[in-house]
Image (cartoon, rainbow, N blue to C red; front, side, top):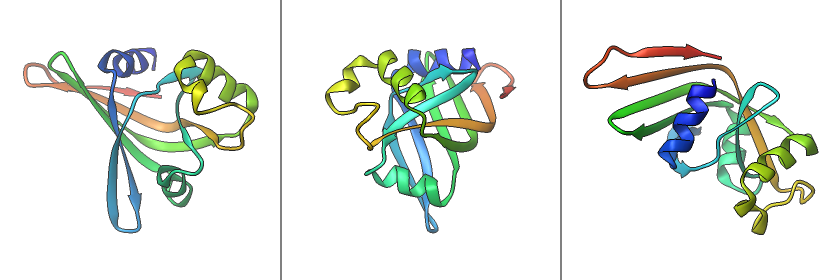
Length: 130
C-alpha cells in the first residue's frame, strides 16, 4: 500500500472514476494519504463525487508516471472522524484554505478490498492487494 500511495503522490494527479446511475464519471484528484494503515483520499461532501460514492462506493483510480500506470479498484468508505480529516489536511496544508476538519464539508474516504495493478508496455503486470 505504501508503494501505491507513493506512486500516486509521484504522479501528482490521478483520475478517480465513480458511477452516477449508469453513467461513469471521471475527474482529476491529487490527495493520497496513509492513516492508520489505510489509503485515504479527500473530497468535499457538497461535491457530486461524494453523492456518487454514497450511492455506490465502488470506484477506480488510474495514474500514469514515468512509463508505468496503476489502476486501483475497490470501495471507498467514508471515515467521518475528525482525526482522520485532520491527518489528511495536515498532510496537504494547501487544502486548508478550502477545507477544515470541523467544517462539516471535508470528507475523507479509505479504500477497502482494494486491488492495485501496476502496468507498463515493457513488463508483466504486478498486483498489490490491500
